[in-house]
Length: 151
Image 1 (cartoon, rainbow, N blue to C red):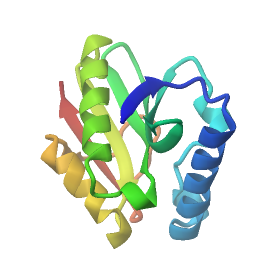
Image 2: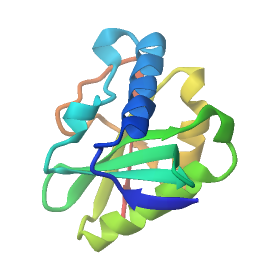
Image 3: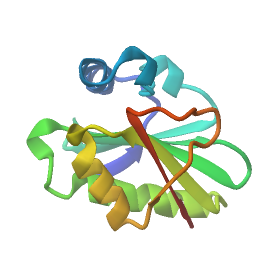
């Protein structure tokens, strides 16, 4: 397993992200879906990482710069066959380290409030995230929870 910065040009990661978007659309109402498609991830303020097993994507995550000190965790996903095998923990630890290296002092995220997202919320809690009010341009939403931590 290796974690690499990805320019999002390969067909395998494109399909991996498309699958993520399809899943989020099936779970969340349209007004509560905050997952970014591949074009929205290809902007200068976002760094995107892919977790690879050989050449196969098994996980991904991104860091979106909100300001000089605050970044948002985006697009965390683990392949269904690799859930609960340490992929997400390794990636989250990597992104937290990279966020510190980039000079950020706060890292926040939005995730779902449904039971489907409970494993993700537990992972974030394990890594020191706590629940907070909406940040950046988010609004209160019963389908979303917001979490943050200092770095």
